[in-house]
Length: 473
Image 1: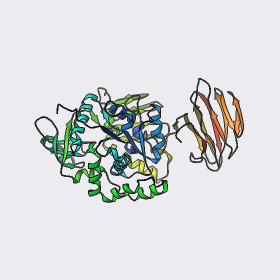
Image 2: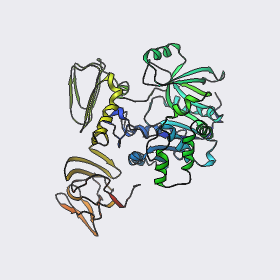
Image 3: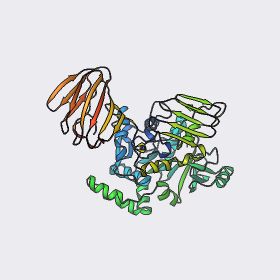
Image 4: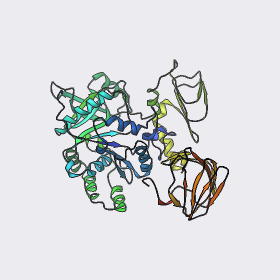
């Protein structure tokens, strides 16, 4: 394929609704893997968007997430001034077939012949130029009506990935090949045979197809999903959307459509790709010492072998470990053999069963105006350290169940309580009664830091009634 001038306009669909349970304790329900900064200064979602921008402009990018992660995803886009990206919100997770279908259904009818390229938000790709060339070629075949998937040349007999069997090349001008079948996560002996045969590829989770081709396949193979998506047209209202959505089939795009079609295209690629699915996968993306260890953060590692040691805040010291993962965060620590790393999701399930908040959020929570850290909490009280960035302010809000005491420890706060507006300096404090409208603002060039003491019978974040806000909330 030398002539790509006929490649169509692309729409990028980025799937950003996963909870990343195998990356606990760093990944949480409200701070999932796709917003972690594991491999640089940008989150994985931001890196995914940056990777696409040379071919797909912001106005043709669609990010799909769910309601529980909407705020953190919006914040990631806001940090880069990417408000032009279309955000599609699922009321609850229904797997990738519903997510991609919802994105396709959100486009106007004029986009009917357009090619959709689907990407997970949490993959790592090292070779950018090769990626863009593959995306251009994949769009060419998709424009002709094919369903296209990127196949990753396997380096090891990995049992945690799905595989694609490829047949003959489409023609003499391309490396693209006819797809034969998808195989979901084979046992080791089968994966070893696939590697030896040479015509099997890892399933990258990157797909391209025309919008009309996708919707026709859904109508034929997933009629309940297709009819549900049709019922969502015309803005039926939040309650109706939730009612419809919870009845949609919970099935992946792979199982629901790709494994059932007989005509698809595999484009073999070598992109330096990783799905960064587990702590074990992350270990292979960093330099290892002579004993095969990767240490990240403030660590002391003695006589360890083939380990990943991650320290977010505190010093982590380890001695004599082999094939282990240790991940330390301010409120939770994971210690796990590398052979059990796929089962970290079971820990999250147990935390959820016991209603432990460590599966949901971190002690420090980012907000568009700054951040807060929970210092201590108990029956009837919670103590937070709050940082408000220069020129930012919280929403004008009130609480039905809690009062707040604010002590300024750095900077000067412009405080609104009811109809009174005052400046509160360092070493001064104010009291905010229950059900009283209030706002905290930082008009100075330095960070404003306060200690907030909440008191009352209910202290969760959903007891915030916003009257005015500078952001999207």
